[in-house]
Image (cartoon, rainbow, N blue to C red; front, side, top):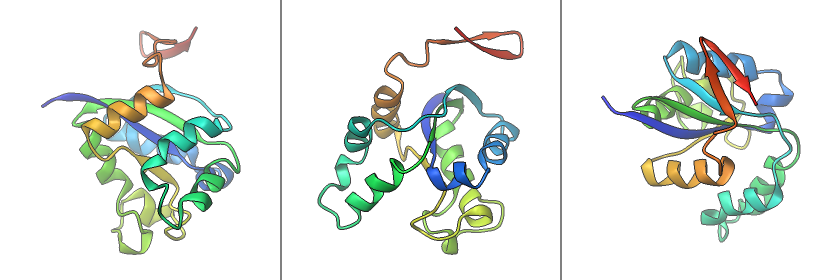
Amino acid sequence: MAIEQTFVMIKPDAVSRGLVGDIISRFEKKGMKIKAMRLEMADPEVVAKHYEVHKERPFYQGLVDFIQSAPVVPMLVEGENAIAVSRALMGATNPAEGRPGEIRFDLGQHIGRNLIHGSDGPETAAFEVGLWFPDGGADYKVAGEQWLFE
């Protein structure tokens, strides 16, 4: 099995509903390591670059506005087959089309408030990790089983 890194972002709706701990716990219980994370108001330039692929779509501006409306939790996640595992944990983009056990099905309200974003492939993961964590999460070090921020 391949150890991979991927990007996951807990969106403003999950943060405002107090679901961050539950969501992180699901990743950790599945064996994923949170290599870096922070709570922040997303930088408008980063958000624009992140969602640039959707720029011509009718939902683009609403999505950008939503991501910038409240704090988000960007995360650098690592583990065996991290991209596929993360996508399976998140579930269908539309919570109504998911299955029990998936984050979006269990906790999401509708497609516009689906709690979480995750990279959909290796190229996207490399781009998104580089965009949100340009230092590769290097500010975070492991000491035993505890994560320390320097």
